[in-house]
Length: 414
Image (cartoon, rainbow, N blue to C red; front, side, top):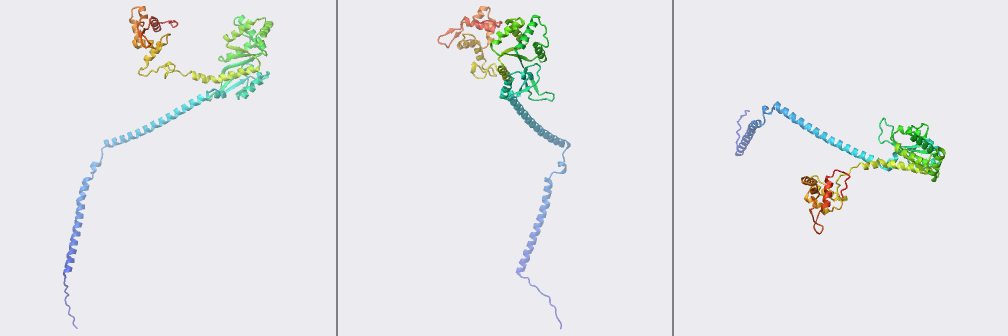
C-alpha cells in the first residue's frame, strides 16, 4: 500500500498578522527602551564623573594640613583653658566659702559664753589647805567652769590658761593668760610691807629670796607680762585699816602712812595691785570677776579694731555722705564751720556760698595785706533766711580765721 506525502499548507489569518505585528512592535519598544537605558547609562556616567572632584583637587597642601592641625590644637587649648578657668573659679569659691566658714566659727568661738569653755582656772594645791577654799571650788563647779589643781610658780596663787584653737605639732595645747592672783594672810602681808619698806629706805636694795616680796619678784621675772593681784584675807572690815596699822606699828615700829606708801609703791613700780577681802567668799567673787573679764576681752578687742569712716553713711549724727565725684564736699565744709560756737546753719551757708572750699578762703587770706583785714574778711557777708538780714560779724569772722590759720593746737578760739 502506497502512502503519498503531501505538504501541509498553513493559512495565515488576519488575526495572526495582527499578533505578529504586535509582537514586533513590542520587540521594537523593548529594544528601544533597552537602548535608551543603556544610552542613558553611558550618557550620564561622564557627567557624574565631571561633577566629582579629581584626585588632584582632593589632594591638600602641607600648609593647609598644618593650618588645620594648628586650628584644632588652638581649639583644644582654648577648651582646656576654659575648663581650667572654670575649675579655678570653683576652687576660689570653695576657698572663699571655707574662709567665711572659718571666720564665722572663729567669731563664734570668741563670744564670751563660748570662750569660757576654753578657759581653765589653775589653782595652787597649797590653797586647798586653807579653810574656806571649798567655797571657790563649789562656785566653779556650779558654773560648770573648768579648773585644775596644779603647782604654780608662786605659792597660794591662781592663774588662768586657755586652749589654742588650732594645735600645731610642737604646741603644748594651752597658753597662759596674763592674770595672776595670790592669796595672802595678814601676817604674810605685814612681812611684805616690811620688806618693801626696807627696800625703799635702802634705795633699791634687792629683797631676800625667802621673803614674800622676793618670791613675788622671782615669780614675775619668769613671766614679765603677768599682772599680779594680791588678795589679803581679813576676817573683819575694820581690821583692814586700823588693826593692820596697829599691828604693823607694834611689830615693826611703823605707821599707817608707811602702809599706804608701800601700796602705792607696789602699784606704780612693780605693777602689783593689793585688795583687802573679807574671807573666801570675796576671794571667790574676785576670781569669778577676773574669769568673766578674760572671757569678754577677745570679743571686745575684735569690736574695737573695726574702723569707722570719717563721713558715715546716712544722715544720723549730722553725717554727710561724700560721693566719688566729690558731691557732698560743700556740705562737709558747711558742717565744719558749724562746729564753731554760736555759728548757725544760715551763717555757715553764707560763708560757703562766698567761698565754696577752704582752699579758696585760704587764698583770700593770703591775698589780704594785713592781719586786721584777714580777721574782718567775712564780717560784711549778708546772712539770709533768719527773718531780717544781718551780717556775719567780726567775732565769727575772727574765729573762722583763727580756726583755719592758727598753728597752736591748744589755742582757745573764743
